[in-house]
Length: 85
Ligand SMILES: [Zn+2]
Ligand SMILES: [Zn+2]
Image (cartoon, rainbow, N blue to C red; front, side):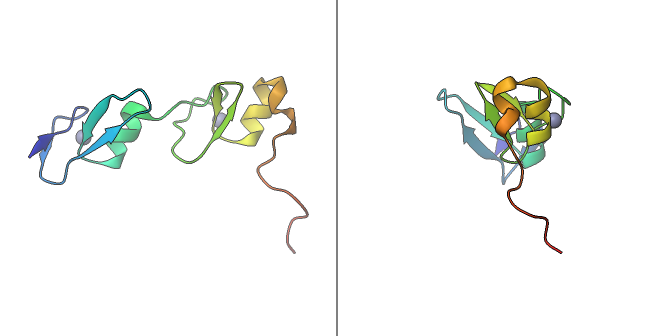
């Protein structure tokens, strides 16, 4: 058994996440893992759960937010090409 470091739940299916810095964290759910580890969009402050966008070391939830804040993000698009009919 392992205890979630966010909520304290002692759960038999708890799992570990190893970050790029080598730190190891224990969680009972993906929700708790996201609460602790997910980056936050600089523009709208949502937790970035999906791929998100990294521009010059700054994190955004989508291309719109990257374009709004970071000049390097001006070229970023969420989609390419014509909208399907
Ligand atoms: Zn938890
Ligand atoms: Zn955003």
